[in-house]
Length: 235
Image 1 (cartoon, rainbow, N blue to C red):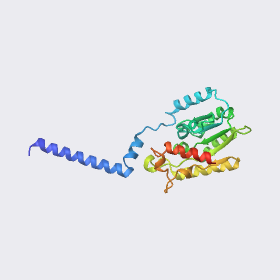
Image 2: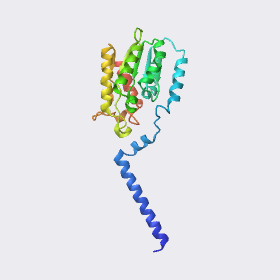
Image 3: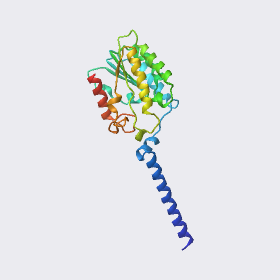
Image 4: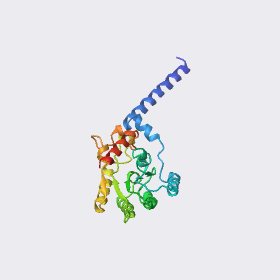
């Protein structure tokens, strides 16, 4: 057998071995969908600061008045087209992707000053992602709540949604989400605020975000937003 032929065979065998090993690794870490999800860029708080301050500036320059509903939160709120579900109301979306409780606190006055009839707060999954201490998180959410004191706004605290490990990975644990939701429920009870349990409407039999409501295991798809809105309408 010629030397060139031998080298070709060896090369082919190495490629087969590499592909086989790679396939096994992909399978072990959660499959190709998990790999696709993790390949997407997830902005860190520092890298995403331009988006935060741009959106904050846009919000502050808005001339919207006679606001009926305002939704406050991170990307899960940011991506929702809530005004299309409540066509007879003036609806503002104050979601900013990648935001945390401190970020909401730093911009909440703009919402408070508009004196909306209703305000819906959902924040916390990024606090968990970035290892915010539970006590600091609780303190900041309490400060957000206190910002509405003496105003005519009816504030609602919404639970944090579960995540799906198979799609999103283990960056956020559902156990930690449950812990933070307990904090939110306690804050609501202590302040006479209605707590809206969205979490239970999105869990599968394993306590994870049901795949039928998500593409990436963290954010909601269109069907997910329909479930969210129907929950609000039925309260």
